[in-house]
Image 1 (cartoon, helix red, strand yellow):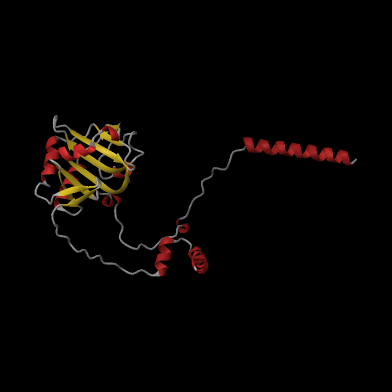
Image 2 (cartoon, rainbow, N blue to C red; image 1 turned 60 degrees about the vertical axis):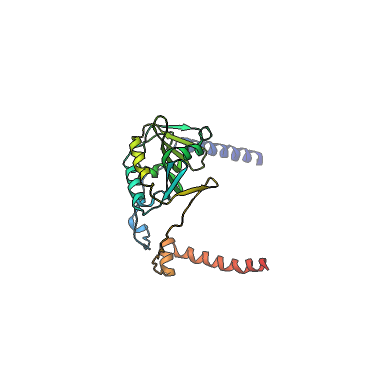
Amino acid sequence: MIERIKTLLLTFLVLLSLLQSFFLAYSMPNFDVRKKFTSDYIMTDPLGPEEKVENLVFPEQLVLHLGGNKHTVLYPGMTFYNIIVKRLQGRSYDGFQYRSVSAVDWARIREENEGVELLFHAPIPVKLLQRVFPIGDDSVLMNESIRRIWLYTTKDTKEVRVFFFNAEGDAVYESTSANLTEQDVKQQVEFGRAWTPYKLVDGAYYVPEQPIEMQEVTLPFDRITAEQMQRSLFNDPTVTKILRLEILRFIPMLNGGLK
């Protein structure tokens, strides 16, 4: 009798498993869209004025290579800096081809050829860089982040070559269809002829060869309260309190370990 009950129970479980497998394999999930109400979104307090992304993407340094191993550096806010960047933003850059970094003697090009080098403080994704420079949608380049743009004219053929260096510095992409002429580059380089000369140190830093006058900058600031900080950075104030309690509890433990 017990064996018969066991057999019936086992048979029932097997059939139930098959039925569940059938529903899992052939039933459709519920794709009904759940409408999200605006009341579910917690508005944060703005801590300052909003700024467009385009205004935050710009070269940290603009290096002008004058030929004959002479160089100068322009910085944001300078008149010539603004003119050159504006002109470069008015050109288009297309037809990218991968080049080997080691195949080109960049030190010789820097010393002998006239050109402009744009150095960014941090790598800029190409999709973001497109918002300030008219770069074509090229699959070769789209997944990269750019740290440096270098354009120069060759001494022999007077050809303009434009290179985009990636964040790691192990890949460079040449824009073979950039609408820049030799005269464009020459005009931009001429802006630096009368400027303070710079020299390259350790292959990485440009330092002035003559004393330069610096300006003192005063930055105003406003105080914000702890409540404003919480509302701006944390959606749920209770999480903030829990996190703060955990930190306070951890500090005595850390002090004890340091002793």
